[in-house]
Length: 103
Image 1 (cartoon, helix red, strand yellow):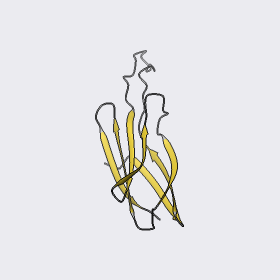
Image 2 (cartoon, helix red, strand yellow):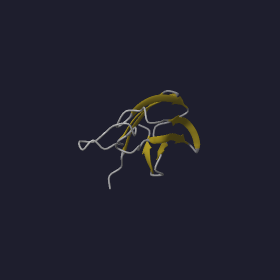
Image 3 (tube, helix red, strand yellow):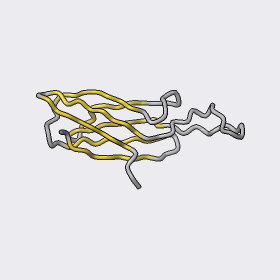
């Protein structure tokens, strides 16, 4: 199965800029399908980015976040070739993580 997480991290000087796209339905629990039945809630609750064993970014999300969420942030201390780990957990207990290299 292909990863649902796409990450691009680029380092320039002391600053590392991270862009991430996560494929997830992010269903709120308030939308109905074609048959008129409510689609149960299914959304990411926690997204975490780690560099060198330390958390550099955490997001606590809920049902109001759009499908396939994109986020962008920067942190200091990353260098080219370092690993950046991203992981998420949703309200159904599903989780995924991915490690990418800083460019």
